[in-house]
Length: 365
Image (cartoon, rainbow, N blue to C red):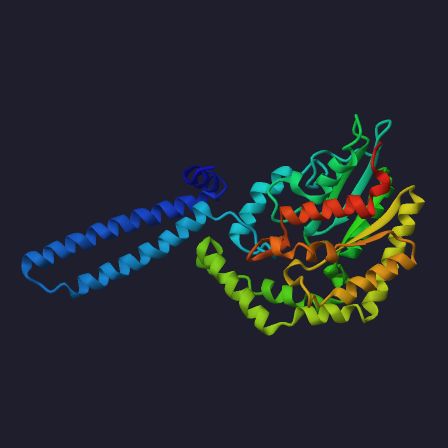
């Protein structure tokens, strides 16, 4: 897409009220410049000093510069941030996520039928923003969609359907409730895969939500921060920086796995396994790491091992994706500088690992 086409597309997804206000502001700047130039001409003709005219023109150039930044962000910026707080990120969701939702409200290429057609089998992925594909423009690039392709790669007719039950912000208690509701409504599935993210424990330990609340509670009120793109982006970058200096989120999260909250997670995983079995499905777990802190000193490696050991003790097939991603760390695996969700390459690696190590027994003949 050329830059002019991108500009048109971005403006199409921008609120009409914003476009009208921007047009009025640009016209006001044009009128202001014309008046300043006329003032300067009159001052020269009358032999008056131009000091105040120069101040006015300097002020106009400053306004024109920041207006240029604002219009550039409104016309060309098309990215997400980790917490989906900025207007740019929210517009991205309106463009790429909302239109791709099926009639059940999930970002999936097909509605989820209760009864499977003859000869069909189903894998259902449950999870949070990692599962829904936060930051990915195409559903086809997600690990769940790639897994469906891989499972049916050697079959003349597609045997396996893969459904994506992911939603931003879901934690383990919510996911358990959704899985239970799906079975109660009679949705058939042979395999349930829970894409476990380490902060899914948050619902059982409120301390770990303080960093997010610290950012969210500082919602702007003035129109300059709420109704713009550049200034809104700048505001939340500053709030994120401030929260990073004042709130120690990750130590609290690690401590959650040494607190009673971990016991609640264990019991929930056991109930999910049992519920799946009662409804003729097998429950499996894939553990996703925090993408931004991968490497030799990854601080949650022991937590990964703790979760994996528990799953094996409970006869829950489990795959730890930390080693998979860590082996490809130099390839760049996150969506962007301000969004540490897995990008297309990371989803591809996850799909390959899932097919090889967690779902290899399902491949169609």
